[in-house]
Image (cartoon, rainbow, N blue to C red; front, side):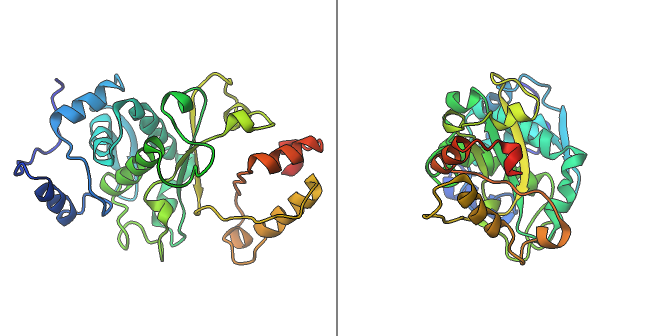
Length: 271
């Protein structure tokens, strides 16, 4: 067993006592956690095959060192299975890239959160949902991987509401925000291939976004009609992008995607 350097705390063998301790010390997101015992942490780290003290990223605003061990602790707390752990490591490495500007995302008054998008064969092996209800409940992998990222932002980065996280009202997506792409019903090539990876590779893409905003269209029968409705929904004057610019992530349902592609539109045509 690896030598753990995290602080060890003796707690009564009582589930409720553990929950009270973590809530009182501000170590959780408000939901019950899985107690991160040494055995559970060890099992999680074994799935990564990395030095426990390897620093994956430094997480603002406190710039805490997100070591493999600390990530494992938070993954256990979130309810992750060990096989999910490589996805968490990839996600933390991605949000820690300076180009992602995580400090601004953590500290802004805007209710944005890192969205984790998973592509490739690992979607099936982990049973990640990219179809009906992908942004909602009921899939353990989506829920716990997304939650583990948030716990890292809280416990390693210090992004606590009203302190390091200055989001005015917050958002439900700050609990968990993780989906897979529905590659099987995508009429174009998947996101990770657009970004230079091979179709058979498994990847994680991160995007700082608000919670999903529904676009309702029951009348469009052509690509142009559907895209006109979409463009109108994107161009609302109260959106952050109306003032400062920025990227918009568009997630199409299979029927609309098929109609748009069937009319000969590519992704570049839409953009």
